[in-house]
Length: 204
Image 1 (spheres, rainbow, N blue to C red):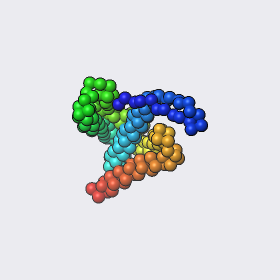
Image 2 (image 1 turned 60 degrees about the horizontal axis):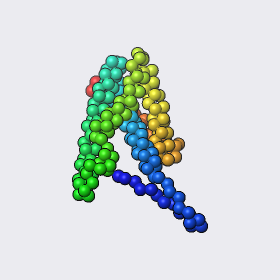
Image 3 (image 1 turned 120 degrees about the horizontal axis):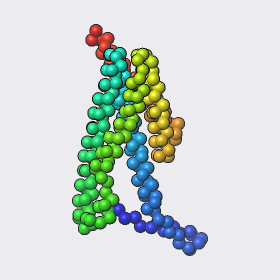
Image 4 (image 1 turned 60 degrees about the vertical axis):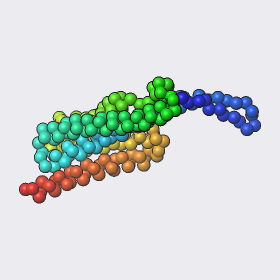
């Protein structure tokens, strides 16, 4: 949508100051994209690390752990891309219909609409970046206990980093945001590992 200049007036000074808000809108758009990328990376990290730890609770083999993580990366990236593509296409269809009713098709408003392909690619890339962290952490460690500990440690540090970035972008309290992201991620990994360990015990 086209953005008009915002006029700011001082009550004591009748002079009118003009502030072009297009820069603010552009910055807000970039911030939203970056925050979405951080959330996508966080999803990739938590889901892949949880999957790898769950598999390791049943089978200690490093190959099984890494293969399961890689399969989770591929499945998650495809799922994120398809979901984002469908979501943006639906949003785009609604906005195009509104522009058509307003007689504004073909203008700047239509060109400013988000691209479903770009959104899908960005979502898949963000998920893959997050999922690669536990994969790289586990891929070169043979010992089972050390491998699990390293995956948890890397995931914890990455969660803290994602929480910090999300707090800065959302202008939220950093400590609270980091704690929330870390606790949620560690809880997901712990529940998955614990339930799969219980499954192994019951299956024996």
